[in-house]
Length: 116
Length: 106
Image 1 (cartoon, rainbow over the protein chains, first blue to last red):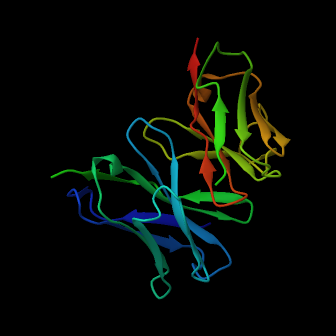
Image 2 (image 1 turned 45 degrees about the vertical axis):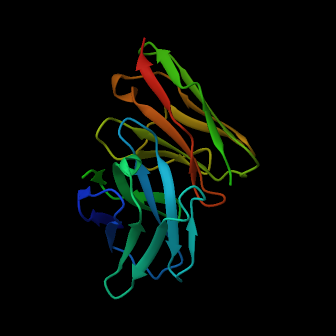
């Protein structure tokens, strides 16, 4: 059973960088899988942010591509999200997630507020 | 980029009735489609993957169908715990979510 756990600041100032980490247990982040970030603004739907493969390749949502970086730390079996130049529109619950074999795994989500 | 369109945005259904939710892709995604249920304050729950395969522990009243670009989620007899928001997700090329269908009590 793969478990995902997000961590990071719950409050970020406008124009700064939002940084979150997802710790993976029960599976190797170096495996042939894609590890994703998804967000959900208050009262709104789910938005895919981007993903990283166990081999290091990345893909990003075109609408966020200029501000997003997803990276991984194999030694810690975790992957990370950096979103720069944040505004209030980036306030959301951020989830890490993965599709492994035939199922989907999600972290419990971490709320992030962008405010001064 | 693949766009996903769900309809209707809101579906009002009485308990015990059938609910039919639709999801359309902007291009063929084969059967690379999943359905999730989300209740307020909760993580999305996987219902269906590969367009028509129920996830572990999902009751038989939930069924998925379709392939290519047109997909349907049917809940055969709505129970009180089924009133929630439902999202489709294509995973054929990156990920794209539909905007969601809220199933509410009529």
